[in-house]
Structure formats: C-alpha cells, structure tokens
Length: 380
Image 1 (cartoon, one colour):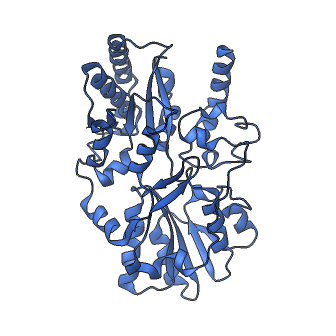
Image 2 (cartoon, rainbow, N blue to C red):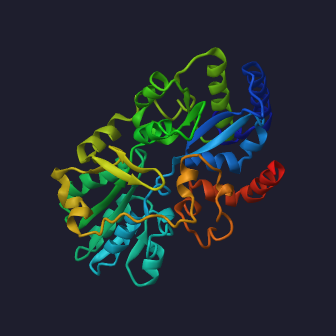
Image 3 (cartoon, rainbow, N blue to C red):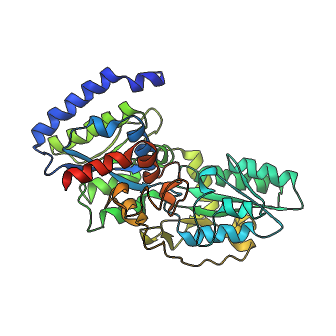
C-alpha cells in the first residue's frame, strides 16, 4: 500500500477482524478470560480510539494502555523545576505545546507564562536554537522531553550549537528510555499481559534488538506496530498468530518505517551527547534505574540543570488522581475517581488529561466517558 487512505480501508479491516476472530476461537479465549494486549505507545492509544479499533475487536481481547507517553510520566517535581527556570528574568523557556498545561505543584508552564514569564512554544529544538541566535543577551532553554524518538533531535541541536559557538543555549534534559519502562511493567505483580504492541516511532530509532529480552526472558510476544487502523489490526493478528502457534518472538509490522537495525546516525548522536542517569523518577511508576539520560560532562555548558539551580524536589500527585494506576494499565481512565469530573481538559489534575498522547485525553476526546460508564453500569 502506498497511500494513507489504503491503511484505513474498511473492507480490509473486516477481513482482518474475521481472521482475528478465527484465531481467538482456536486459542480458546472468551469474554470471561480475555487476552490482554498492551499498546505501549500513547500514539497507538489515540489511533485506537480515533478510528474505533477497540469497538471493532471481539470482547475476548482487552487492550491495556501503557506508559508510552513521555509527557504523562513526567513527575510533578520536574514540572516545578521547569517553572523555576522559566521564572528567571534572563531566561526564554521553550517547550513543545503538549507540555505547556501539565500541572506542577504550584502552576503549569502556561500559568507561568500568564504570570509574565517568557515561555514560548516551539516545534523543534532547532527553533529554540534560532531564538538563541536572535537573542544573544538572553539564556534560551529548551525543555528536552521524550523517549528515544526525540532524543536525536535535541542531541543534534546541541552538536550544532557547539559547532556555531552559541553559549546562551541549553536543554533541560528529561529524556527517558523505553526498555527499562517495559521491564518495570513486566515485573509488576498487578498485570498479567499476553503480549505487546511495540512503539513504532521509538523503534524507528533503536530498531528491534533491544526488545529481545521480552520474548527471551519474559516469554511474551511483541509486534512493533504502525499507527494507522490497519497497522494496529494487522499487528494484533500477528500477535494472536504467535500465541496460536506457540511462538514468542519480536516481529516488526512497521518495517516500512522502522528498520530492524534502527537509525545509526541518530544513535551515534545520542551516544555522543547523553549518558544514562543512575535512576529517574516516573509519575506513577516511581524511580526506575537507568531509565533516563543526562548530558555528558563534555557538553556541560549546554545543560540547564548545571547552569541554573533547580529545586529538584519530589512532589506527590494529588491523592484523588490515579494517573499511576492508569499508566501501569491497572485501571482504565474512566475508572479513575476524578476522570471527567474534577479532572478534565479544562481543569486537569494529571498529565494524562492534557498530553496529545495521554490515555485520559483519548478517552475523553473520543467518547470514552460514556462508553466506560456504560460498561461500568453493565458490570453492576
């Protein structure tokens, strides 16, 4: 297939659904004991709801929403650090748009902007570097956030700033890695997953080899999936085929974009600029060893954490907010006590309601409130 509408063909989707139903009948699962498949990436969650994929699937498949939204897993204390940097009068603080409204303990970056801080939305770290060129008397800080998907762009921007000798540019590094996250989920006693839809965009950078431990040690199959509805349905079919045949492998449905070996140039830039942190704090998941990166000593001049004093405090989420349970897939967003009530896109209590990849935002935007409440009433 060459065109995007071909990946949204209903007739092809119906064929895949019939094949999925046939495999489920052979495997022998039903509604009382559904197969649990986790889509790790928040981009998959939004595609699943946008195109109605979950409603097309048999009830004997339960899709579990994972923690693959980098804005969602950012702890409240790191948001406070962003605000502390942004409040410095010499700083122009730049960020992607979906991080603007994530609540900290005092305020969000959007509220800091309303209070007079120079906070600007950019589309790439190169936009922030351009601002540094245009404002040599100001310190321009870019909020580096994301999994391996966005790490290369910030690393390459740091290398470009070094080549140009730009001294007033730095990044506040909050990049995180996907593999320790999946391991933490697999080690959780709360979940009994049957397989994974692997993150397509992360895999575009790192390839498929880093996931081998999932199949080799934990004996769970994974299919790296694309983001169109037929991509997701085919990936689910591939997972079921593995389960039916008694196989446990890492397969790549998204090979048209994510090569098996990843992106060598991107990986080289990441290795040159970053090194692993000893540990990193995740919202809802706690501290995970070697799950984040920091700027290497060789590029300390571009590290906002070293340039500016930040509180670096651990702040607990509001007790009423159940972001952690949603991130781990223990509950659905609509099962959170404040979902759609005290917590909404207009008045978010947690990051999952404001991020473009957040599970709560997906449920809220695409009608999950009503569907979830209907399911709850039926169960009662």
